[in-house]
Image 1 (cartoon, rainbow, N blue to C red):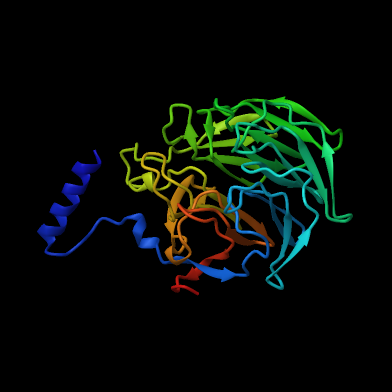
Image 2 (cartoon, one colour):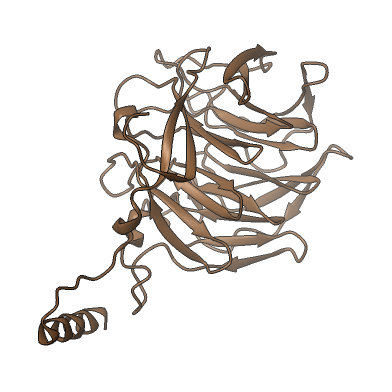
Length: 342
């Protein structure tokens, strides 16, 4: 048992006349730095979508401070730290999904917040700065689903329309068609997070169909059409590595990849509704998580934010706390040492 091992360790330390403490993930809380970047030129918002095409990040849709649906879209250039407005989507929404396949961005599903759920699906072409409606999503209309792209296809799974889902469908832009895929191996859920690495997708967190925090963690491999269960994000083993894993658990957070590591940050606890600023780093090679510098409290913990990565640089912004939504963006520098409020 973990407790017995800890007592034995403390006893050995006392017998040797030295001071020692059990190492925890908190040792890493100064690894990584958050740096303020240009505020979004458009309205502050929550539950927007984001994707990356080439050397630009894109963000759009969402819910403004007056609970009005947004359809506008913005392009971020990391090299100039500036925003440019691009063509708006044909219909506003929030809690949709967005991803990019090749040189186009795709947005679909979502809700108007009045118990109307969407399954329409659109492609954005930056070359013509225009949106084209595509084949409707093949599953049930839903909000707060998970969307990601692997290779030449996009995928949508999980979500909610009053009931919970874990079915999955793949979109093929070459044929403008959807195919049914193998369902997520674990719990149905809403508000989960996903990231993609080496042509495999990872789904973590969210709220399951029992209204509890989803702690199962899964990897999807399109090449074999299989789901693989990874280490649970809770303290379940007799080893030390997962002692603080309950800090990873959240819903409506964001996820991104920098280099050979995955990251999650922001979001909200399922058990008490409190907001989360803890940042965790996932090692794909070892299936282990390490805590990193939290999203800075001066910029406020939040849920319903967005994240995108451009040329190996990750940006997190928008979202909402208990009051008004946000329009700020920050870049996370995982190799830098933490410096307060820079």
